[in-house]
Image (tube, rainbow, N blue to C red):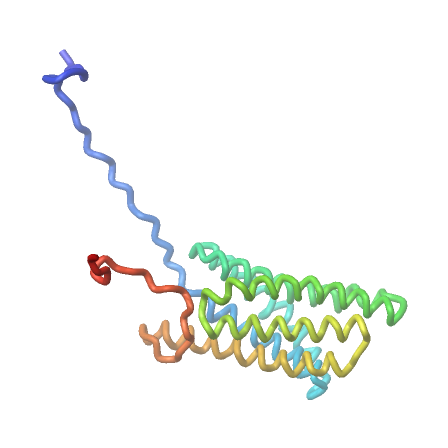
Length: 223
């Protein structure tokens, strides 16, 4: 007869648990790619906004669709795989920003009938991204100094461009271009540090990590 479970003296039959293999995501860090795509597209548009090379806006439009847009969006999807909420939201959103910028310039602005309409349309578009960038700056303060610098500079860039668009102030847009160039430089630096440190498997280029280090049991002291 089969053993019954119950009071003392009963026989317990133990079954070996089926081993479950942990999920391993073999995906390289997409952050250097996303930052590089963002940096190059931002640089091209910013040198145009700053009136350094006006035709650079045409280069920015091409980059916005492919590199800053599609490639950065892919980086965001890979961050989802790595369970990095901040990176997934940032890269996916700014990839969508550049794609929507392409659509806006190619298909929307030309259909507006007055300069006042253009100013409002551009201003509202930029205002939304100003708000998004401002609140994304808060969690960036738990990533690294390099990433936080990108978001602080980008927030300032969007603020200047937004006010410049609403008030049709070319000087504010120009200053937004200058700060945008600094933003691109900061993003390139963060990308450079990421790929170098990952390739050499050690921290060669400083990024000033801001996330608290986990406390190990050996580091604890008894009272």
